[in-house]
Image 1: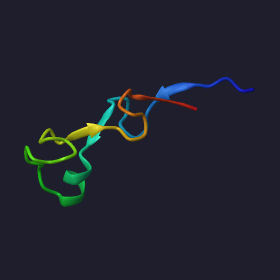
Image 2: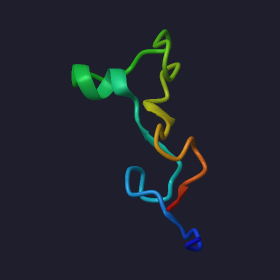
Image 3: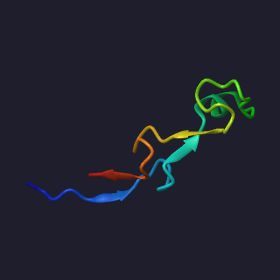
Image 4: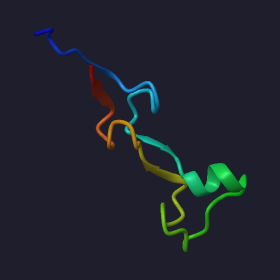
Amino acid sequence: MAEKKKRKCPECKGRGEVECITQEQSGFKCDWDCSVCGGSGKMPCPRCHGNGYVVD
């Protein structure tokens, strides 16, 4: 069995967060009432679940 390698997530570049999907789709900055990010404009990365790394 091949050894699994941990590497930076290519989606968020190791930051663990990405631009809020609502903001990305609408092109407008999110307000405090955004159900996804609460106005921060960021959300946990869906690929690495917010930890910044993926295991291949």
